[in-house]
Amino acid sequence: MDKMQNMALIMQMIEAAEKNIQSAKQLLRESTGGVMPRTSGAATAAFAERANTLNVSEGGKVIEGVFDGQNMLGPDGKQYPVPANYASKSKLVEGDVLKLTIADDGSFIYKQIAPIERRKVLGVLVQDDKGDYKVMAEGQAFKVLLASLTYFKAEAGDEVTIVLPKDGDAQWAAVEHVIKRPGAGGGESDYAGSVSHSGHESSSADDAEAPLISPRLIADEDEDF
Image (cartoon, rainbow, N blue to C red):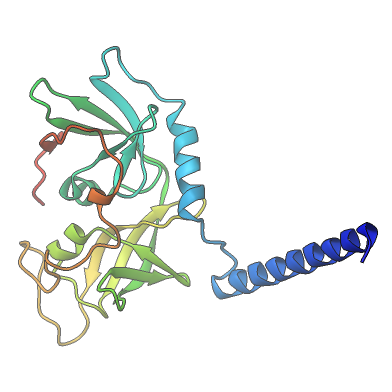
């Protein structure tokens, strides 16, 4: 086979691969109601681009950043862990802008300074074979913070009202309310409930990059619900 034949064969293979990709994307759109799920890499790139427009004070004691569902991504490219109780209580969603003040004792003090527009969706809480809890809504499985589920004593099968960014798609959702399925117990007064802290979150903040120090984390208001 000469060089020209090789080139023609390669072009045919590329065209076939492109058609397969387009077909796969079409099937994915149909199964998700026309919304293409955003990959974690694309999400991180989008948050990083927005974070680059934010401010860091001299000395790095006050940092503005974008909430990515679990952490705050700063203009320095670092991921700063956000207390799950604070994120749950404040119903933070992907894209919210936060301000982090690092106190002299190393404590992190967060404040929400620019929330993005939101929308609410009703879904159903499910637990996958890895033990992770997610909310199925609009043909997509949204990750949610375990702290929110524990507070509402949520169980698989419960209906959950979640909060999402108004525009675009998201991987993470904030929990607004839980509607208990018939015959299920529980309430909304404390943390003891059906979802245990020993269970799994969809992913852990401990697995994400963070500053080398491990400061005590506090929010700008009481973290307890």
